[in-house]
Image 1: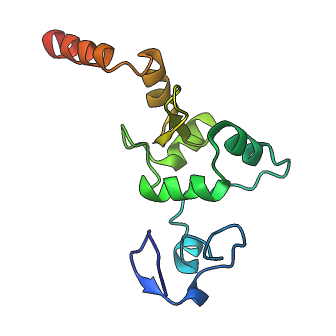
Image 2: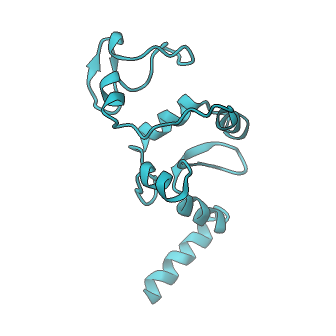
Image 3: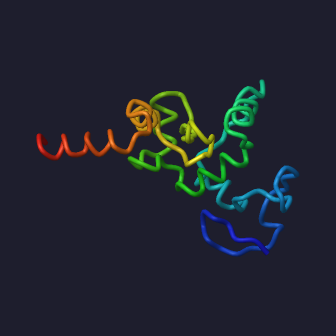
Length: 138
């Protein structure tokens, strides 16, 4: 038995597609959720460039990226923009946000939120000053 993180139902392993790269040998999402299109699709890259980028830059697999999508409900973790709209708007997937010093992956963000954090150099003091500035002059 396994619980699908999207629908929350516990189902038999036969309800999940086989996936040799996963620890339990099955996909994260049940077949019904995948078929219904409830998942922001991780498109297969025939050249393997995306898979290679995820692995070398962030030390995660495409399945790890899908897990992050599940955790974020396929939305930017700051503004809530759906991954599908990000893909339509920019042609890109949600960005993998990570700590530049430790390399630790924090979550998935839309392009604008990711660039915003980068512009503030992940500095909480600068972000607080920006918040105060907006509060005082908003």
